Length: 174
Image (cartoon, rainbow, N blue to C red):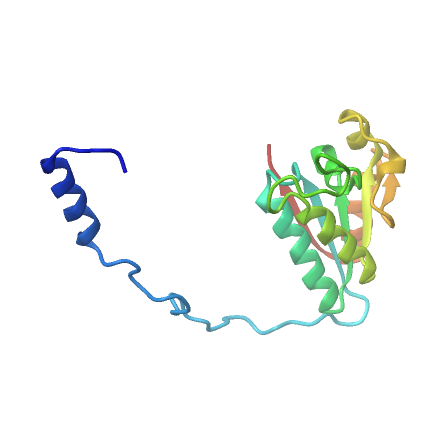
């Protein structure tokens, strides 16, 4: 710590002592755990579509959308993710630094890993070709199992899933 005069040091000590640290020991419940709604499971033939329009690693809403789609899949829904616009970047398997797949900072590959898990567990992932092109990405760089789709398919996918009575979750950020 830098050198401070006696008055500043006294104020630092007073400030630190005002609230005991840690205020709660590690492992202390800070929030209740009562779940309000039933743990719904899919009925035969139910679908769940998530549209993602958000930059990976800069959009917690996009990451949470992938986690929700995975949870829907595990509940028995026919679950699909559709990445478009900047969301298409999440489907590129060549992300990483300094080499592909490397984790440049904690959480950097969360989207890629979660998308790969979703596909392995039976989910369907569409990625807009126009979204890829806007950001200089190529189809051959997609995560294995991701389906490249025509830009006009975004709207028709929504219509398709709406006609099936699907739950449609759409996340968007700038």
